[in-house]
Image (cartoon, rainbow, N blue to C red; front, side):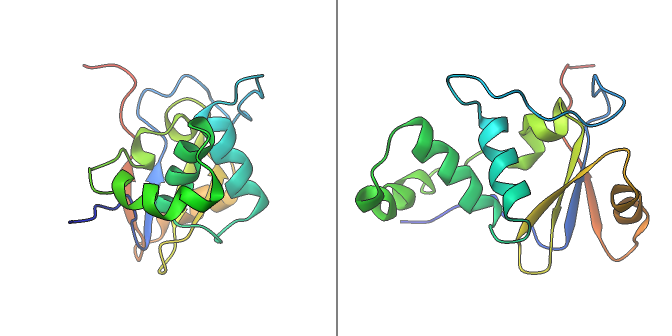
Length: 137
């Protein structure tokens, strides 16, 4: 079975062109956790610890109540099909965070108004891609 990945290396996902905020906002915590809330918590509590695949699968596992003992098998099935990457994440499309993937593919997020965000945008050694637009042109 061919496995797909959402991982990037040495890449910075900038906020979308039509982002509705001018500075980063923390995703609200709701009774039923959102993907953005789970992603934000995982990445801010453990920057550069997880790959995009780790975060995306953990979101799926939490939302679908996958037990710890079943996760390895379910993860293989999950990545047997292509999955949306962080370019489609509300963190970059709605809440104003850029997502950096380091040389090992581990991720951290940076608020769009911050100095680290600007430094990554201006770093010629880092590949830049934009988050997906919220609306079609």
